Every structure is written in C-alpha cells, then in structure tokens.
Length: 146
Image 1 (cartoon, rainbow, N blue to C red):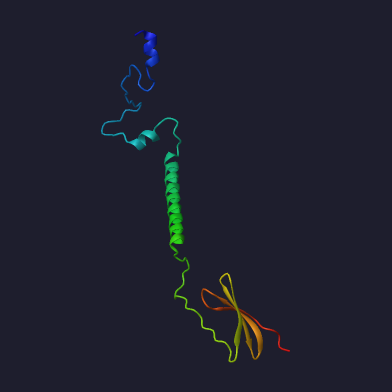
Image 2 (image 1 turned 120 degrees about the vertical axis):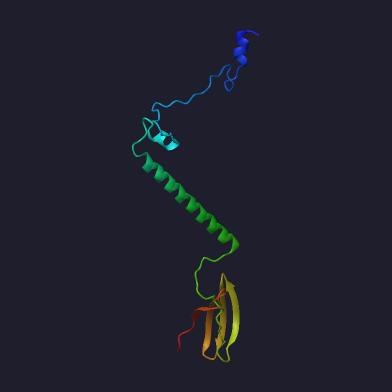
C-alpha cells in the first residue's frame, strides 16, 4: 500500500497517530490547596469579573422557567380533567322558581346555557330567562302596565 492510499483511507475521527492529552494549569496550587471546577473558571484569563453574579442570575432564571413550566402543565391537566378553578366556599345549588298562580308556560327555548320561558298569567305575558347550569333567574321581560 502506498503512502497516498494510506492518506486517503485515514479518517479524521481516527487519526493515524494520536498523542495523549495532558491538562496543564498556569497557576499551580499552593501547598494544601486543591483546584476545584469553579475556581478554575473564575481565575481563567478573560473571565468577567462578575462571574459569580452572572452564574447566580442564570440559575435563578432557570428555576423560574422551571416553575412557570410546571404551572403551565398543572393548568393544562386541570382543564383536561374538568377541575374548576373557581374558589367558592359552598357548593352552588339550583335555585327554585315558582310560577304565579294561574300562569301557564306558552313556549320553551334553549339558547346556549340559557333557558327561555314564555309565560302567560292573569297579569299578562312575560318572558323569563334562566341560567341552565345554576337554575337561577337571569332576567325577566314584562310589558308595561297600561
């Protein structure tokens, strides 16, 4: 095999010869001192003087991003499972509505979450609007008395 064939088949990832890697420090530790990862970066030439402050800011922002993401996931799961975000003390009960004496229901319609009743009584005709979720009277439409 010629030298040119050898060069063509050689890979950049696996060079023909590799020298061992040696880590060297320009500042040798004094007697009794050890070198830690943090102190190596802080004493590195070109490192900003406020490296610790920037590191604390990055860690704080990372924690805040994590908390925001957790809150987002919790809100999404609560919506999917149908949990209500309302903070009410007592559970709501359906309201009770009684028609006046002698009144008759002429029409009944549903529009969204509203129940619309057309009622005729001795006093005249009226329209009653109820919330279908709670059963409470939302509004009444009555003609003016003559």
